[in-house]
Amino acid sequence: MSLFSPLGAPFTRSKTPWLVGVSVGLALVLLGGLWPRPQPNLVLIVVDTLRADAVSFVPGNDKTPHLAALAAEGQRFSRAFSHAPMTLPAHTALFTGRHPSQTGVLNNGMRVPDSLPLLAGRLAEEGYATGAVLSLATLWPEVSDGDLERGFEHYDRGRLDVSPASSTTPRLLAALDGLGTERPFFLFAHLADPHEPYNADSGPERKARVSVDGRVLCTLSTSPMSYWEFDLELPPGEHEVSFESDDAFVLRRLTATCGGEPFALQWIEGAPLQAGRRATARLGNRSDGGKIVRLRAWINDHPSLQEIRRRYRAEVSRADRAIGLLLEELKHRGLYENTLIVVTSDHGEALGEHDTVGHVVSLFDELLQVPLVMRLPQSRRDSRLSAMSESVVRHVDLVPTILDELNLAGLPNPAGRTLFEAAPRLLFAETHPPEAPRALFCVRDESYKLIFTPLTESFELYALGPDPLELDNVFAHQGHLRKDWQKILRRLAQDSTGPGERAAATQAKLSALGY
Image (tube, rainbow, N blue to C red):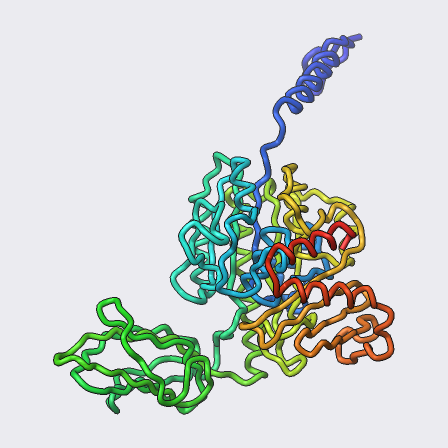
């Protein structure tokens, strides 16, 4: 009796189809070994000044839905920390895997030593196309192809000191075009939202009047902030340019140039970065004829603490939407699945805690604790990362982890360790004058934080379990529990004021001890 397939073709019990299937399967396995998956791309997103508790990872919460969705596909680390509450030292630590005292970059505006190995340079050596899109002038290099720009083929600085996400996002999408698809790529995406001046997105618009010698030239918005440029014809003699408003404002910068050269400007009322309702500067034309002087100003309003908090939340949402647009573009281009995606912040922000608004000035957790989400290529899960999800992890651990995941050799002499290695870690952080009012050093684990102030030779100790807000200094009766930490911080403070080699040697010793 004949048997028939559903299509009506004769069916026989031959072994030939089975053998063909086995042969094809073996061929695919062999070809898979000869033809491995392409090297993964890397997208590192840093949202400047983003506190850890400003991000919601609860499904259905609309505060940061795109970050929540990314975390659901990858791994979220709930206790991630920066090493400095200051942009350039924090980014330098992140890109080198070394502490600020090791890098020597302790303040904004410092040079990043050419001898420091950087993540972008390492990836460029391995054939990666490298590009960066910035939104904050603090990350602009002092010299072309220097500082953190080293290793990037394309380094889009942007045009403004602080660029909102609405202008950064199109540049990010353009950067993807520039990186192409012929090689694996590394894209560093920097978002300035929610960095101050906490730009207004709604509410009554506040304005300031600009006058020269009592004559009103124009009216500027202070909420949102304004960048203003004006060519002024000055006859010989002394002249006054004034900014005046019914509401407090901050004149962040006022410059005068003539023919591209600085023109003398003297403050007679108010000063840059000083909140007030009036600011006046004197311009002196001591020549016999008129001069064309170009005035440039950057001005914003001075909101209340309640308004700052509201605007901060709004800017966090804007950054999250920008992240969503970038991730969606990666999917649209077919790049998402084979891309390692890391999202973090350089440091946090105080919003009234410890009587502080802003960053730089302290080492409390609102300034050091940051979000950290890592999504491995191909939506792959790794139990070793999950084992570290509730532990203290540090920015210096990111470069070793990234290069480990990309199966590339690490940078030399890192202070951090790959997060694929489950082990307890200590956080070291520091902040320094002149940006900070005084030098501070701290060490932290999951239970305690010890802060040292070299100027006063004093310590603060916080038991983080019962006191997560760091309000009760228990050093007087529990300091003996962390005597070894006291010695370490004294040594770090001593070496940070000396040659960079001493600080690097101290950090190397601590790293060798597992710190």
